[in-house]
Image 1 (cartoon, rainbow, N blue to C red):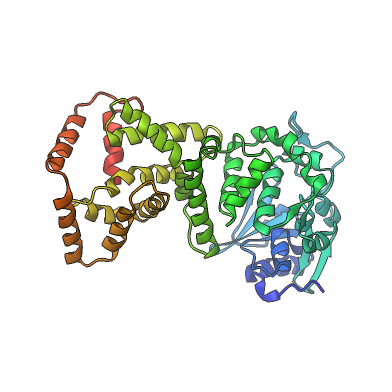
Image 2 (cartoon, rainbow, N blue to C red; image 1 turned 135 degrees about the vertical axis):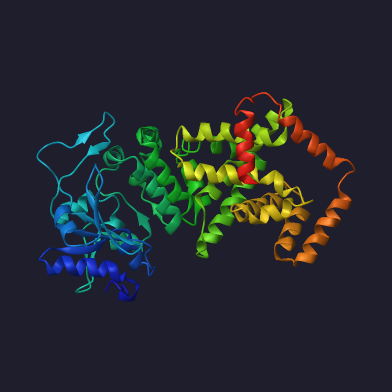
Length: 435
């Protein structure tokens, strides 16, 4: 009756369920995987729920790791494939540990399957599938809501949002991703409770924003966030940019390209994604520093640092991702230099492809001449002779004395005093890294 195609199941998830059941435990595939299976989609991740405790689960698998403080779970690894196993959650005689706004801080109580279902966030995520007999258990009308394309919180919406404000972000992401409507009672408290997002740890907030932006429906998600008042403070500089027509056009174009790649199952770099979202703010800061007399590269370094400092106050952007963003930004001026050995060195740079794709978006947005993007597209695939011919043509077009001016500028930069954001040596280190 439910129509789940067993061929869409993960062999490793089925294996985990089978091992647990053979040991006498209850075990089911649960949550988003069941939702996607009912929609005829192949889930990206599989979660398993069981009445075995985390320690009991861990003993059954060679590569199993206990994680989590608020609620312990087990990660079971099969090569690079990760299956998340949770123990049924339940109520407790003792009140759960919460902060003053009602957010759960510690909640390690185990319970029955029905209690576990009541503790899940949305009805469409509270279904359990047993691959052994192909039986589906639905405790809260999830199939009905799935068929009517409705998102509904289990329990009292205000209380559930206070327990975990991230649920407000999740419901927006699911609405955009699945094309579902949000039940009126479920959506009603969101605007008033939006300030609770300020209590969410920045690292968790970053993870949720990354899921939202890499959902394949990022622009729809952002529009829904803004419509429900959830956007303020999540991406502080992006809030301002979306109010400016030119900046909004660049961001929409960037997110559209990102969504297309995700739908085509192409790889997306988080660093590239955030670099595009915050570029308009970097540009503004870059112009301010140049207006004060800073040379272009040191000015861009300072602008990048300013924007990242403001952004990371709210979102715990990982250092690796921030480095990727900075590298993509700093390669942009070099892409406009198409003379001498510079184009060849750029092709060897590990961030070249990301910087090139970034530049193409700038060209399409009208920020750069389309000819620049066309030149690089041809140069990438050209033979050695053709590449040299293209560079020679650019040399002839270059204004007389421009090379001498660049050499003079670099020489003068060696003796510059410390800039407002970086010392000369720090700036040179970054420039050499992008070289």
